[in-house]
Length: 381
Image (tube, rainbow, N blue to C red; front, side, top):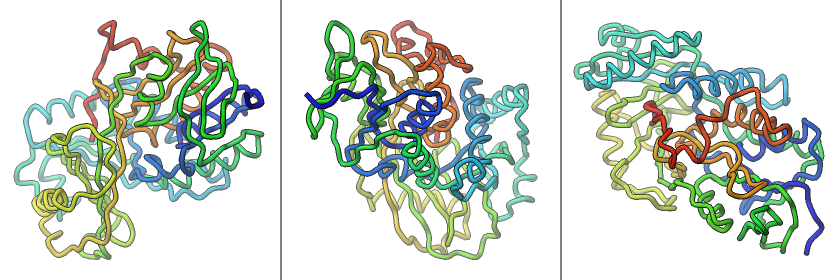
């Protein structure tokens, strides 16, 4: 048996590192983060780094607001320049039903103090003349939405966690969560067995498999998401907001030296695939050229793929997994992990430390799926 540790955090993406940092900040000692590869090299490092207030569920808006506040002042707090930009998010609706949903969402967002504009096709065309608006009903624009560098953000938490005494073990796989009499007793890893009384699962798409070793079934499935970067492209004036063609799950935004474009393939089954499918790229290009005809002159520089950890209602599982005492989870963010990481890390650390948080975690309890208390998030890319 290895030397006992106070708490094991499994997964060194932004969620695990943010929570570890906040736990240490609240005085928790002997925290060890385990990562099967290198920190922030999986879903966090492969994400597009977007953040937005435009959610349909109030709880997600609260998380967004808190996270964006932190990201905006990240350089002051952590001395890391994360390239924070508020170029905005523009959601487009082709179908009348989608347009109605966007307008309903705006009402919720405005009630919570979020500035969002509802725009006609003509207004969109005037502000972004390169967008084909011939088949859309309208759009919503959040000027305070934007993006930042997800890897640098995670490294800010990484660096400050180390300074506060957190141990981070990279290239160390966790094989099994050990349970005795419905309580956490330790973890089995590639470096041997570590005894501990608390475990936090922040392993993204791999979380369900680890939870299963503790006898808990979590409804989290992995799905590949592919992104492509164009070569230098100067025909569209900067800044370019994140533009999301909601009905077909296509999006693009500015990213030096060109544009970043992507699309969610909802027909692709769950898997752990992370290679780029060049045949799928043809579909992405087709959607890109339809929405922005001038992109017919753009060339693809490179592409990459990462994994979304998706739940049935597109909302995360945050908090204790009560069937096993001492086991906690923050996973299943369905593509929103980076932008919610700063807030979730703080609120979850409060809960783990004091069994109470300044944010109501109830909407994200894992037992909501068995009690019928799901509340689907409609704004998912």
